[in-house]
Image (cartoon, rainbow, N blue to C red):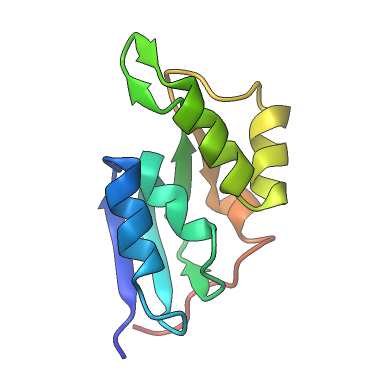
Length: 117
């Protein structure tokens, strides 16, 4: 089975990404080789087979539209992220309209580095 590769995914609708990642076979490797922001970060909920490249970074922000945060979905995300991600977000001031970026230097302590192509 070929890996699912993330190069530059800035997210979209939470419900669509949730369905996409929940429908993915559990054994499929997800390779994060660039930016994964917003709803793209839903992959961290259940998938254990994630590896990262040196340009990997996760971007977190309020769910909703500019100027109109959706507290229901923002809290839903925080409840579903792994504890270490929710703690990192809290330690960095919580969710805001502008994304906060978790870079490779943090991610490498939680995910293995991708090997080969």
